[in-house]
Figure 1 (cartoon, rainbow, N blue to C red):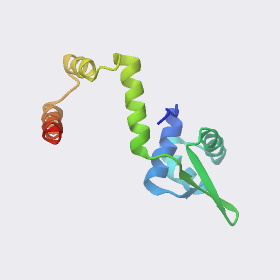
Figure 2 (figure 1 turned 90 degrees about the horizontal axis):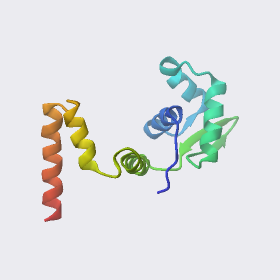
Figure 3 (figure 1 turned 120 degrees about the vertical axis):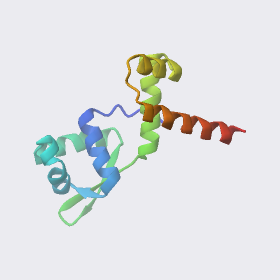
Amino acid sequence: MEKLNLSASEWKIMSMLWDNEPMTIMQLTKALKEETGWTKNTIIILLGRMEKKNAVTYERIGNAKHYSTLVKREDVCVAETQSFLKRIYRGSLGMMMNHLIEQKAVSKEDIAELYDILKKAEEEEA
């Protein structure tokens, strides 16, 4: 999948839509107001940008536009993760993990979870 280049603000809207789609502009404004302070106009501007990126679409029902995503969360996350790894760690997951461990940014619980993930991946490869 081609990277969408979503801004942090667009990610907030995408996350809300992935969890609750379809949603109207008013529903998005109400759901995001407390966390972001965004007005209806801000939501409209962001949705317009996201439409141009082919991230969202809408269906007009009565007077309201009901917005839905055009891409799966999993696909966007994989593309973003790959882009991040390439940009920051030259594509090396090992380099990223080593950096996080050196910076003490990984807890014992995280390490246990990673062992479980790696063990599962190893078993699936066998």
